Amino acid sequence: MKKIVLTIVMAVILTTLVFAEAEKIAYIDTDRIMMTSPETQEAQTILMGERQKWEQEIADMDAEIEQLYADYESKKMILTESGKQEAETKIMTMSEARQAKVQELFGENGTFVQRQNELLAPILNKLKTIIEKVAIENNYSVILDASAGSILYAKPSLDITDTILDEMDKAVE
Image (cartoon, rainbow, N blue to C red):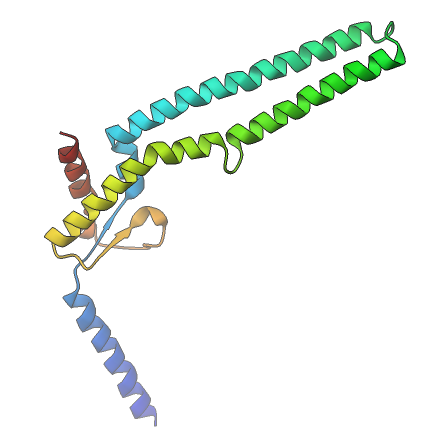
């Protein structure tokens, strides 16, 4: 019984090794590609400019809230109860509006994330097209992404990141 199990295990291992040798596998580092791509850098510049504008909107709201609070504190002793309540309500309303604006701009599905996706989508589509082209031209069966963290070790000779970068540069020209 042990010999049969051992024979089956050895057969599976040998079959896997033969299959792996027949397939061409490579990997790329998409993080490196995205960081060195002029298109990505341009998209990041645009995005950061827009982010600064949005952060300024939030800062302006903060200044307005601080001014309302300072006015309230300076007049608190002379305000009637209804005047105090009105000032506190105004401060609270403005604070809530600020929180809503932050969420709208920088929340999970906020304007920042949407704009980032909008700017990067054409670059990622181009990258996908180039990866497919290189895979077909070089007869690769599989191209893995090292930046995803799933490759624990691979021979440096299997890294085709520079090839992909060269193809992306050609596509720009």
